[in-house]
Image (spheres, rainbow, N blue to C red):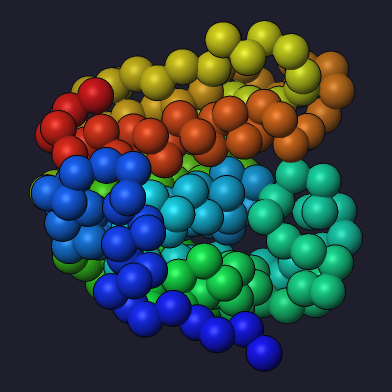
Length: 212
């Protein structure tokens, strides 16, 4: 049987590589993740490892075998709701983390209530129309919440083409701006993770500096 560390011991280990005042900010933050696919599932893990201890996660899908090549799931989780599988993964990192799960289809009516109180929401949908709906709803109905969106990270190579830009107030876009239809190679883990890293790093920068 694995003996879990006490909460204080784990928090000390999580912040051992940076000053305690940084960890204090991260510990108080609330971050939402809309979509738990290649981007969202990996962003969630990075934020948990960084010390974010309050996450709201939302996705309607279940883990499929085709997800394994790039999403943060394992074979024994095939068939699980992605919210449930993500919670398991997150609690394997930090059993004391607060997770609010929503296994629902997000729409303009429920988005403001689900992500109420979030400092930042990460948009990690696949379908362009749903991405636009989520972003527009958050910007209009949750004006104090920053939105970090991921787009354009298919294929292989061109790592440095993935970048982060502030589009306008409270909206940050991570990706290379290239439509998947124009990229050879489909979806692969390395570039998806690079983009997810940009998103997680943007969250950290906004929480700690208020800007990129």
